[in-house]
Image (spheres, rainbow, N blue to C red):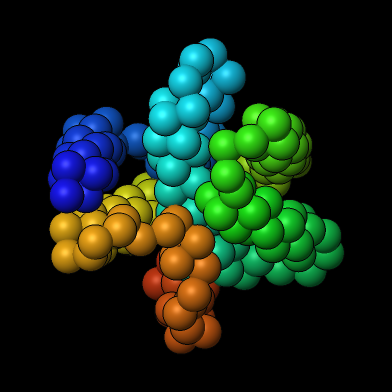
Length: 210
């Protein structure tokens, strides 16, 4: 029981932090997620006990799972539409990288804290860093050069992020065991992605560079 309460309280705290910070645009929101993941990985490698590491892994997997979900449902479809024919590799490669990262998350969250546990997390960390670097150095600069309304998109991303966090917290309170972050990989309907990639997600904005 205490574990469920702990998970809910931590998720609720993160929800308050997300609402309070409210980044100025979609790219800044996603970069904030990247920084959170980096900080959690650092905490993991400094942790001394198996219990601490297991708890931190849960936080890492949840943060990454929610981040990937909002990118796939909202950000990537909007980016693909905004870039049009200019996007031959960026979004497809990002989706493939997400698929590999999901496999790593599934392996790590099911692994026992044995001698290979740290190695599994290290691989997940390295893969995450690679993905973050590609997004921040290749995808995000190109997105800023489009007429995509990053303020509107930020609000959509934040609302979806908070909804997913609230859902996880609610499920944690109603189960003997907290839901695994990988549960967020399921049930991603095509309609959600289609709605997010519609013309409502785009528009002229002062964030565009010309």
